[in-house]
Image 1 (spheres, chains in turn brown, green):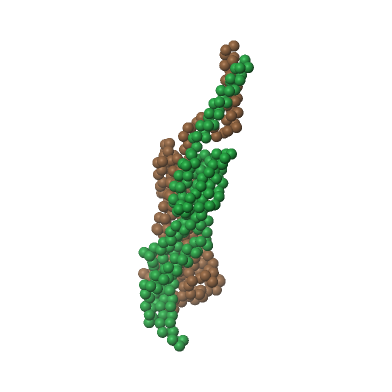
Image 2: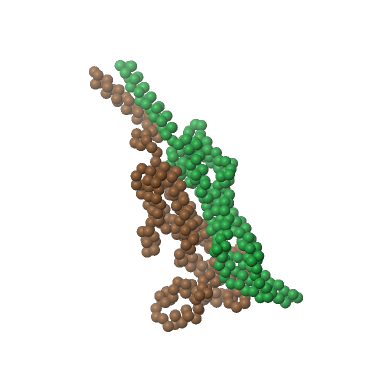
Length: 239
Length: 187
């Protein structure tokens, strides 16, 4: 009789407890973990919402053709190298020499006067979003309250060349037709994508990444946070 | 038997109520949440960096005959940072019906830094004929470039970006702390 009574009490208690847990599911963690530290998965999901955020917006104005005409380079030397050498332009010239050659050829083609007393130039505005790819973010929990995050190096997330507005263009008028403008804009965009970002821009982007991740993880309850740039991801980007 | 049955229901019910109370206590207090939000807001949330081009061109003439001209073109790096203005108070309130829901009111975002880095000035060319370019010419143009960049940053939505980022960071923190819903208001 006693055993039967105990079993009835236990069964009814279980049913009532399950019902209570069903009503308020927030009680479930109390049986598994008493201290609330967000799981790495939870943090990762939270970080995913930051994907659309850039760590830095860089508005870069490029002066065509002067940004590509390195005063230390000599056009005649570049031409001589090309005439005497064997192989492709890419194999014969350095990136700076190629920039010089392409910019000078285009400037001459569209009729820009860039030497002598009268100097003509075009200012092209590019809006560059710098950030990190969150797909490559690695979150490695070490022990309770301790976490390591490896992030890929900052890179160009988006790049837009803006059309100039004649009413707000604060430079001498652009002596270009729309088709010539398009050629200049295309060259500038290609060169911006080819060139690595300036060191100071990368440094600011890195600082912002570290700040955001540290702040988020601290608020999630982590006290020992190590944030590092993932060199393997950097190598993968280079390849 | 009936007493036993009632007893078996009462024990888990009391236990359940105690657990509910404990769970309410284990989530961070409103003061603690306010402190965490303040820590997040202390960071300037958005930075725009500009490589601005400055052009100075002055030509003087007498009876339609040019007498002097000066022209200079240079670039300079300008930084604009925006965030939430912590000089103004923000409020954090729990929903009366659901303590896991938070009502938050933030002060408006503002530009916190506008900095011209004169060490980054790079000159493209300079033409001086009959007249020299003075330091004052540079300073005047740099000041107008600064204002131009500030207006541009406003136009591109730096304040909206700052507000959006601050909200995203705060929501992430609150959800990780067990909050189920956040309702935003503006001071």
